[in-house]
Image (cartoon, rainbow, N blue to C red):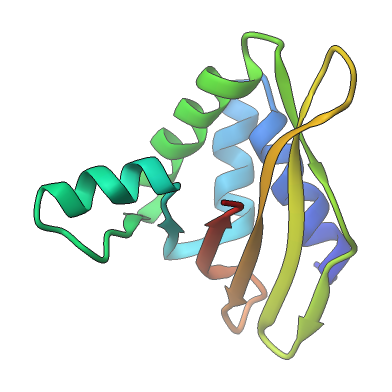
Length: 137
């Protein structure tokens, strides 16, 4: 897949209503053992620090955990019909690294409700090895 296709399918994944299609997209995009590492939003980081975890990160690994992660994000943000995810800027690729930004928009008026930056590291087959996600503060 070329860079634009990878990113288009990545955004499609988070908006996909069909569970079987989401699972297929996870397997199409990530390699075996692929993972997503999230720099959590401030409120989660603050709560983790209060529990003694000052540098909290969240991580899922492998298809089963990625399926759960995507399904929960879909159920919380997209399924109720309030939000959708959109590409904010064209992706940029440098060898095996791809970066782009995205927005979570309100479906009623198209305004931004948040967003973030992805840094994808691809394996030799062009599948995601690691997905670093940075949520906008």
